[in-house]
Structures are given as C-alpha cells and as structure tokens.
Length: 261
Length: 307
Image 1 (cartoon, one colour):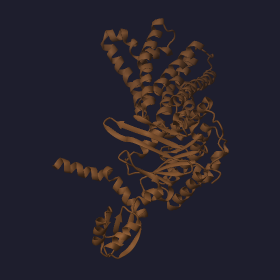
Image 2 (cartoon, chains in turn brown, green):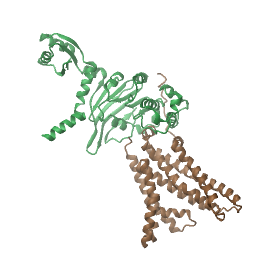
Image 3 (cartoon, rainbow over the protein chains, first blue to last red):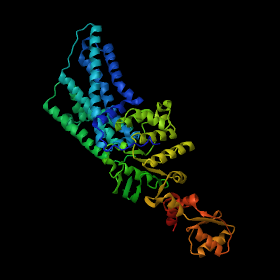
C-alpha cells in the first residue's frame, strides 16, 4: 500500500491549457458515436462528390457545384459535433469527473469551444479538398475543362457560415445541457423556423422587406451567395447578436451556476 | 485534511444542509453516515465545487477546491461510479484522467493492476461494466493522481464481499500512509468496519460525531436478565436512562459497573452485561436519524392533518 502515496511535491503546477485542448479533442473521437460523427465529415463529402459526378449535367461540373454539394451536409454535421461536445458531458454525466479534475468550467468549455472551431475549419478544408478532387475527376471523365469558380473570399464566407452554424450548435448544447434537447433545438432553428419565416414573407410585404434583420438563417445563408452588400453584412451582425451572442451569454451564465449532478 | 465549516444549502424553501460542520483528519478514515437523502452527497458535491453552498465553506488541505491548481493530484474524488460516458472504455477513461493531470502514461497500467481490472475488461466499454467494475474504475480514477485526500461517495455499492474487504484494506493502507479518507455510506456495518471516525448526518444536520470508540461507548451498556421488566425498572429507579428495551435485553445509557450495581441492589440476576457495541451503534443510528426518516415524517404529517 506504500505505493499509493508518494512524498509530496512542494508545488503542483496548474494544468496547462494545451493539456485541456488535447483532452477535449480526444474526447470528441474516443467513443464510437464520436468517431463516426467525425468520420461522417469525410464520408458525406465523398458521397456528395460522387453524386455530383454522376447526376450533374456536364456543363455544371464546376467547383462551385461540388462545393455546394459538399457544403450542404456540413451544415448539419458540424453543428451536431459542436452540440454533442458540450451536451454529452451532462447527458452522460461525465461532467461530474470533468469538473472535479478541472474545477474552472470556463477553462473546460473554453477548450471545447476552441477545439470545435478548429474541427470546423479542418472539416471544411477536408470537405472542400474532397470536392476539389471530385471536380478534377468529374471533369476528366466528362471531358470538359476544369473550372475553378470559387474565390478565396467565397471560400472564407462559406467557412464563416459553417462556423456560425457550429456556434449555434455549441450554444444550444450549452443552453439545454442535454443531447436530445440540443439536437431538436438545432433542427427547429435550422429547418422549422426558415420555413415559417418564408411563409410569413410571402404573405406579408413588411416581413419580406425587413425579415433579414431578424431571421438569422435568412441573413447567414447569403454567405453562400456571391457578393454581399454592407447592409447584408449588417443584417448578419444584427441577427447573430440576437440569435447567437445573447443566448450564448445567458447559457454560459446558467452553466456556470448550475449544479452538476 | 478536510474542513467543513457551517455549511448551509437551501433550495427555495427546502434546507438540504443546515449548518454542517466537521473535519476529516489525515491518517484516519472518516465515515460519513446517514440515511438516504440526509445530505451526504450534497455535502460532498459542495466540497468539490459542483454545488455552490448558500453559506459556509469547505476547504481541502486548507484551500477551496476551486483554488487547487491540479485537483486530481491532491484530492481523489469518486461521487458516482456510473457517471461516465457509457461509450468510452475503462482504459480510455483512465487515460483522460492521466492526460488531464499530466501524469506519466504508465500510471494507467499501474491503476488497472491496483484495482484488478484485466486487460480485456479495461478494453470494454463502460456500458458493459457491472456496478462493481464501475466502482473499481472509479476508485482507480480517484487514485491515479496519487492524492493526499480521498472523497468517496458510497464506494462499496455494488462490490461483492471480497471487493468490500479489498477496498477496506486499500483505504486502511492509504490512511496509514498519512492520507485523509472521507467515505459516505447509508450502511452502518460498512462504516463500522472501515472508519476510525464517524460523522452522522440526518435531515441535513450533523447529529453525532467523534471517534468510533467514543460513539460506541456513548451508545451504552447492554444488559440481559430473566426478569427484563424488573431489570428495566431497577435501572430506572437507580436514576439511569434506558435507551431501549426489548425481549433481547435492555440498553442503558451508563457504564457497565453502574448498571451491574443497580441490578445487584434490586436483587436481579444478570445473565449478560457488556458494552452495547455494534448493536448499540445501530440503535443509535436509528434513533438519531429517526426524525429524518421518511416513513416517520409521513406518519407524523398524516397525524397532523388528521388532527
């Protein structure tokens, strides 16, 4: 039993942030569900690329088509990854151990947020690379010229749109602290609300003209289009504050005060 | 060393912890005893910063838990062995703890050996673990940082008799090496065989505390005679308090010499006379926590509404 206790070191160094980042990244991959969720980034990109090669007309075999096809599943997968990274700690109750090893919830959730952003960027790079490969293969099969019709700034806009989606997932995970709640919440936000807003816009002129100041999806979806006016950027900013920043601050406050059971 | 000072926790109008004060000393195993819902787990959650107290403080090694730079290296905590991601393997859960605390990778293997989880078992996902295996994994997670203090909530739950014996020896060794152990239980026997010091909680309040010997001796003297009724009358007449009286014997809140003299003076032949020991602790436990027993509360509430 003398192996259990050792002479005390005089000082114990605080846990460095690099350790927290490493551990939080590891926790996203080390379960079967986590692993396949990550793998689904690559799998979905390959499937979407293959579908584009098979079904798109020859004159539409441009990088823009591939990027759009590959980007769509990412808008679902990436927010799920972000939501589950947070909510599973509570749903699976592993928060009990996590927060007894690292009492600062701000540090733990900060590390999760940083890892989520990195995975979002890496995931988009992987997905877009698969799309690029598809463009090369598809064009050579069809015998058409290679078309690279996406600029760097367009790519960055798409990454930004996906980061906003991931942040929404993260916020909902934090707000509900329950995996089913967060996932249902995201689908209501991403699928139900845009439909309702669209219906309202077709019935009501005022909403049709001004809805983009209030409807986050409406404003953010324009990032997938080409050039944005200053007003459009302002609408992205305003709706992001309403839908993302304010709820995030509330969720963060509630999480800090909540009792971990 | 764990110091709990005037801890109070209220949820709306409900007081879960009411001015709880006690210490757990180094070199000793402190048993935290109480019926279900008495406030044991709440107290432990406050100790490790998972629950904010309404008032009062809890310090470990002189500091608030949140102020420990790398808590796992100083305090081993096991609050609920089932509170783990069911999809992780046992080895992975230990690896996460090892990496968080920045321990050498060999620590994982050492702990698996220590708690007797085999190679094959450690590679299984926790959802396939029995409660006993989860407890062993939880104890391994608590010990991996080689802490000075252990806080364990109902660690013997789900362990078989051999497992309980193993844990008892493990905790004994840990305390003998100078460590502080606080473990909770709602089972008297468990606490009695492991603990040096006992703290009893009921209805959110500390109702008794002291060394096991003090608690046992304060539980009085067991005396038996053929004429039990006469015996009870005799000791009462001698000014001694009868704690309990049944066909098994009489427990008197006095030392054996006084009880023997009272029986002798009344001319009653005593057939057995000894310290009440374990049975006395059980009696005390039931008695001390009687006010907080749910059944009892329900009964009196019903009487109240009937009247």
